[in-house]
Image (cartoon, rainbow, N blue to C red; front, side):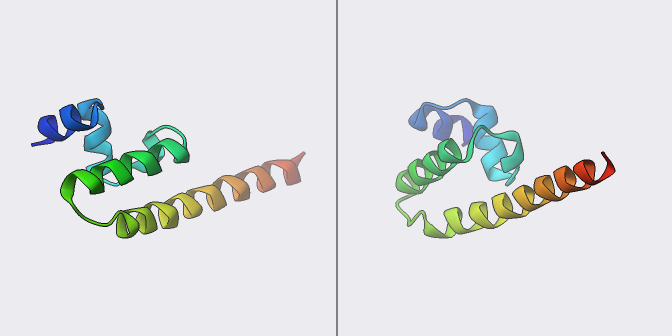
Length: 77
């Protein structure tokens, strides 16, 4: 269960829910999320690489969007 995983990883249930739903933008900084993903994979007895790849892809997309927004704002000024 999510509660079991949260307890084993010493995380709040909400963090596990966000990881499960790939809502990485609602989680803390990337370095923490990568640590959560590695720990979760270890708990599952699997490689963290596929999970980190998904995170890195989504994180890169979000960062590009942030940069585009900042660029548009600076253009207006």
